[in-house]
Image 1 (spheres, helix red, strand yellow):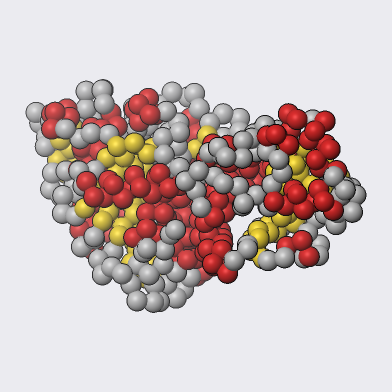
Image 2 (cartoon, rainbow, N blue to C red):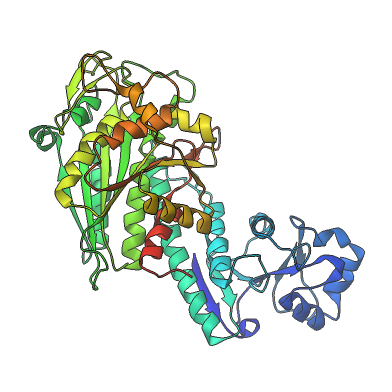
Length: 500
């Protein structure tokens, strides 16, 4: 799918379809007026006879309008012209896309950028539309005999001034790079666990190196290297699996001058299947435990988007790959494991395995002297209980980093909520026979998990994102979402001062 911003859009041949808007009180959007004039009042007469069409979320597909060179016209209601909110704009886009999916059209002109959306300028109106249309048209059908697909190939926008043209080009560039990163991340996360194992994550990381050989380098730690580093907590997770653990280290460095000498590191939990180990999970929805590597998939997508944009910044992405299976070799509740940091951990629950991968990796990352480390993990069901399926939890003691993440969240509507890390929560992790327990007493599980990780991230600025509720949708139509790629790329764009 390609996107273009052009002037004199109505004169470009071979654009099959156009999306136009109507407002309450029979008012028309800019291009709806143009089409109405050319069609001798066809649109205005229609909405006079069908006034409900102007309500947000309503729409209709029109075919063969007199004197119009567009073969298909999608007419969508936009409500009150002066009170279009973000939520209204989203409804308008979704209605347009739902109609688009019912017709065959390779090219479309989205003519609604002139809508006055409260608090959103041209840049963000384009970003939002492209993000939603890529998500809506995403299909994972690699393993189906008959591959369904949509044939939309080109989307056109228009501009009035030269300034708008440059803003539009930037918005398209950013949107496409983010959407491509999300699509690749979703493909990786949706891959079945008999294909996507820790070694497969390594293969995907190396593919990035080949795709962006001027800016990306990849190195790999195998089980032997991990053991030699003293990363016993990391190794313990995969002891019951025939699939050996790996750590993929993806280093991105722009070919241009960079803004930061110290790298920003994104660490993704990559448990490619989580049975729970000896503390085995219920069989209900266990098929969805292939998504326990969505953190690693998101980091993979972030690095791809960053390379696509060639951001002037140093980034390292870590894919912490392992598989948690029950076996005679599996680690057990009651075991005590010495971490790379020297701290010992008493295992209370083997289904709290992600923090064991992350704690040793967080210690390992000290060697890079990072400016910031953000770990991304489907870490706790407790986060879903606290915040539901629409909001990611995040925890940090760094107020400035917290504000940067909240700002990016508000800009992208990739919702996050900061949870506290009070001293009282640390009491939950005390063990009488080791330095730490790997879980608390059963309450505030998302918070105590972050508190556990904070013991291993004291030498740099750090934040933890728990995406257990937001990384995928459940049920028959289960699929990865690509979150929080939009949020974290926006965080980087803001740092590079490249956003609007």
